Image (cartoon, rainbow, N blue to C red; front, side, top):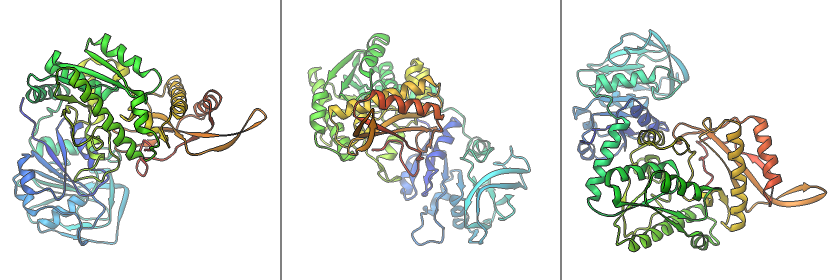
Length: 512
């Protein structure tokens, strides 16, 4: 099956660039994110079916403000400008952008003057989400103004003959109720695309790509039991069958009962060959004295690879290693379009001198897409809907040194959190619910008639669609009460429980 031509989202510094890409995929069209300074030859090489210019916090008149090569508008590819991208398009094509002094932030009434291509599904007055200071006050020659607001004269404009479309508001956010309809009009009518980015097609393309890469070689799969590695394993098994051996490295950093669950599900339920490597002592030795989170991730990533290389040598020299790397992993580990927020052990944490060639069938997928593909492959609900768990495991949920004692504390507390969330029927309402041990902190407490001086635990529960942004979950007080009471009563060495009410951004979901 031929590779889909992507719609490229040009990242101009917006916090919503990833959200735009996800919204496009929700319309069943493949999208990728590129940096605003990506060379034109690179963009041309990708054969885009459409281009979206994201928003951004800068002014088009600022020195050093993000821009694009003006020749991008001459590629003959339909372009949609959003917010800052709208202003950039207007400026590049001869329109006029100005700081009017009348800024718009939040919900705004949009008045549609002409339906054009983009606004066919909107009423004459619609609510949209604005976030801008500058505004387009004169559209470029050949453009038709299709919408205004009470404050700005060009809230939407288009030149369908040249395939140019632009809106000042944000159609990608939920606060613009008809935003998806606008995106679909650009993709289907403006770009002439079909909604063919479907689970079935994703599976077929992945299988073809795996076979082309692997050929007749032996393949190992890093299996953790989570949805990402599970879907990757089944995709590779569908592609190459008995050439695949799954390897579960029990690094001793798993949650309660996970090693048994992995063996039960994959070795027996799916009949996929499984090698169980018990390596807890090795990983603990590597982590001894290590407290820096990046150093933890690097140590765990390197030791993973060393274990797999040993297994590969034992199995007649397997050449390939499958990993469940996702698109957000790649973005967050640093690229030309994103700062290095944290290294993921299976991306930025890998050693340079690997003997194994990586196979990453999920590298272009967001988490929600992986779940859908997993369901299509027949994975059971308890794995498909399993809450995300970091590859470095509980090591990055211990702020401080990873020791057997600290692992016992965080593992016991985490087990209670998950039990109570499940008992309250909140598993599907929370993206992740877990706890973090502040191993290097002590708090004074009273138990019975005695003074305690022990570690605090922080409970973290968030809601999200894709983990790129997240909000703290408003758990019922009685659930929090049960969690706190049980943790203090049942987990030795913990005498205080706190609840994290930080959203992402500014925080990340995990603490490390």
